[in-house]
Image 1 (cartoon, rainbow, N blue to C red):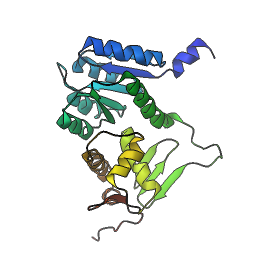
Image 2 (cartoon, rainbow, N blue to C red):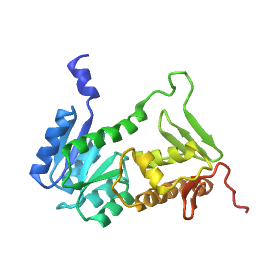
Image 3 (cartoon, rainbow, N blue to C red):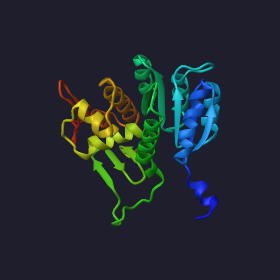
Image 4 (spheres, rainbow, N blue to C red):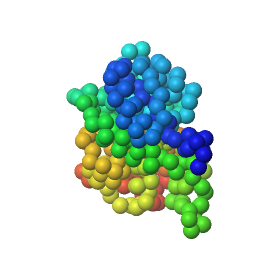
Length: 249
């Protein structure tokens, strides 16, 4: 493999934090893991870089000058679905919830372990790399989940509701795919955190509620019926109905 092809396959990340020591620490560990790193010291520069370049993931501090991380994520989500990992100070629970509401895929609390950051980054990228994959599986069969009003092509990570494309963040996609893989089965919030996030999650169960809310909102833009397929089972969790009841006119 040539040096040029190696560079083409190298994953590119944007590290955003107003503290130089944190940026240097993250850059050191991530470069050792063979990632190509860009840096930004404030939200305004971060947003400009994120809009101009294609990153595999953005590590985004919440509290920053110019624009905070919540504002950056909110503006970025209007144009792109780049995976975002929020960096938050201990006790900033409200900011973490706000981060998920504007489309963040994960968060980690300061002070953090750089090794844990590297592992989480790898996990998120692994779950999203299929976006550029082939249209067929090794057996020559397209990996598709299909229900009335809703369809997922897992090879291209394409979601359609009543035939219209729905743009989801990586975590929203993972959640929908998990629910759709077992239609009519009820999943508790703890189970969804464990299975969809793929690691021990030190978070609030409202994280699941926030993602479900955003998922419904995006589906509703294309299909009211598809949005209603995700049903809240009070006291238990969520399920995806395989045959939703359509409203009579």
